[in-house]
Length: 67
Image 1 (cartoon, rainbow, N blue to C red):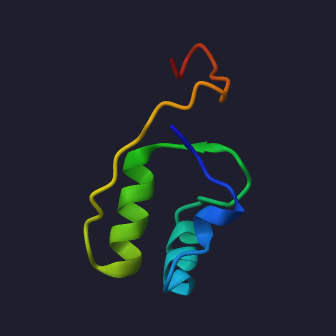
Image 2: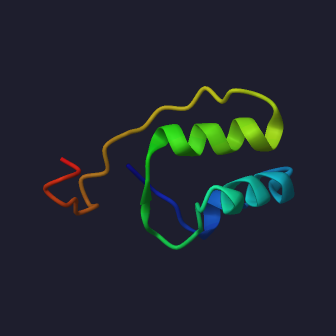
Image 3: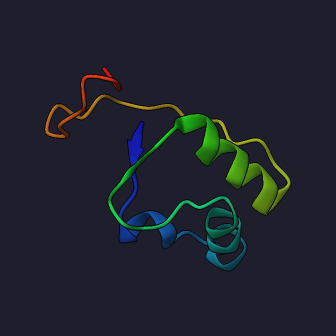
């Protein structure tokens, strides 16, 4: 799961990405979203499959279900 903040939506061409994220229910609210849902939103917004990966952020607390 990936936390998204305001900076996450400030990419070049962000209008289409912001629309694609919003359409999929992904908001810049600090909640956690699956990497797959983020990749699909980017693919939908740009037409390209992103090559992104996740690093584990030890400072983010996780629910037992997500671990």
